[in-house]
Amino acid sequence: MKEVTLSQPSTLIYDWFESDNRQIHTLWVQVDFCRIFPDESIAWVDGNALQEAIAADELPRDTAPNWFHVLLEDDNETISSIFKSHKMNIPATALPVQQFIDHQLQRKLDALRQKGQPPMAPLKKIKLNSVSPLDSTPLRYRAEACHEGVLLNPILPASFDDQEPGELTLVEKKHWWNRPYIITRELAGGMESYKRFPNGQAFDVCCLDGRTGNSTPTRWGEADTLEAALEIVRCKRPALPGGSHHGAL
Image 1 (cartoon, rainbow, N blue to C red):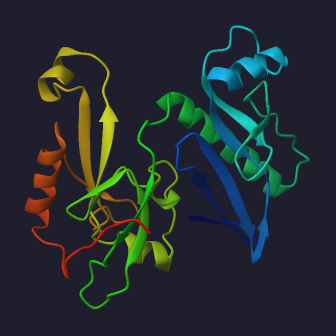
Image 2: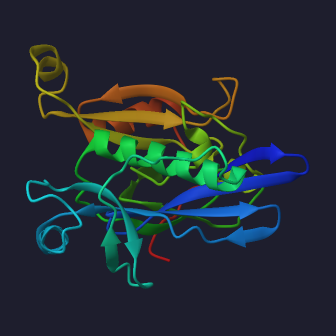
């Protein structure tokens, strides 16, 4: 979650919500104490949805599966229409909030297109005990899996963004302080990559431990297997204080 001051005294808070199937990202925005609904979503479009969009002349005939700026029809995340161009022409006369929304929409779309196809593993709701021995309240996360109390490919706060780091809220600090997690990366071909990561996948181990001097997590290391990544966590922090528990919510 990021907090941005547009003009005193108004403050804007925003975040992206990723669907459990990993195929839709929806923007939500709050200005001061008022939640606004910009209805801005980005979806991975392929298969029948892509063919229907081409038949309706929403997309060119040679369009390949990709991420698109879409309009959702209902709460079931049914795509109502697809915007043909992903480049936003933001008029100088647009309200500051609209300019901000359009900028974030463009930035998110470019980032998703650079990553390519969404992950195949769906997100799960996971509950873990706090790492603080003074707090017994279970904490809730969304991630692909959890191993030994370590989250695999979790949904992270927007404030962890390396390009535009922001301040963490108290709730985010409670969730992520000293909570190690693992992010997987698919690697491009190359002899050097193959020698280090013969399976074509890297496992990055990270943790918000204050060593970076800001609200971004520290990179503890990388490994070529999940077990090796978990071993990095064990060496860095042999035990989770107070134990851990995870399961469906």
